[in-house]
Image 1 (cartoon, rainbow, N blue to C red):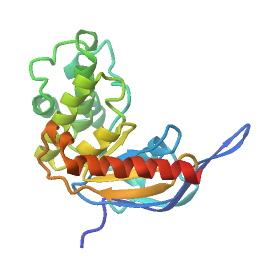
Image 2: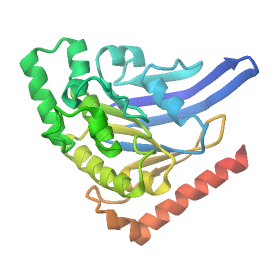
Image 3: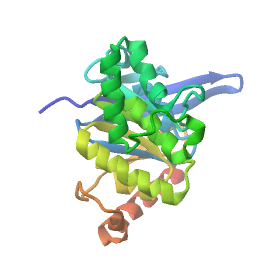
Image 4: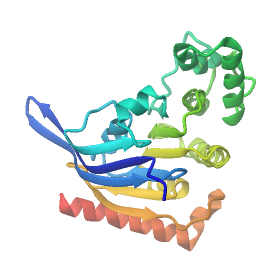
Length: 259
């Protein structure tokens, strides 16, 4: 059996503040397998984003251990093992869409022709071909977020870490991007870790749903989804979908009971 892509063992993180310690994560143990689409859901402040940031070497755990591709998050970051998509698109307004996507490739020292090919490929993947010369302000919020995803895909990391990328978008746009993200995942077979506050989004997208409790963040349930890999939006009306959503809701409620 192959080793998990991401492995956390008794992971804890405590922030020291002027008001005393804040226990963001406590004894989190989880394995993410290659090709998984894992959603993290829980109330605000439960440590979902903190956990993602530990994977990305943006936060340092204070207890336990975490590995990414069998090495430390720092080594994984240096090896460019993952792309990271933030809540806001974070595009530079003075650079075109193509220029924004090209930025990490420039920093990493890719040659110009390789940059061009990669920018074109990821624009095609997120259905933004023809928009490379536009500036961010000329695109809708949903298109900006797709450009942000393209930027994270440009150097072809096997892991995509996504911190509530669609949270600020309206429901119609969000539905469309959820469909596109599933198609993208199916085409690329990347391992995706996805933070969300939305139960329907978590159930629709994921092969595995990780339910977290209020702070200190602990895992209260890990739900392996029985839904097929190919998922039209109307799968959300099926009894199977509704049953998983109920289990997520129950897990969130139980987590509040523990807190």
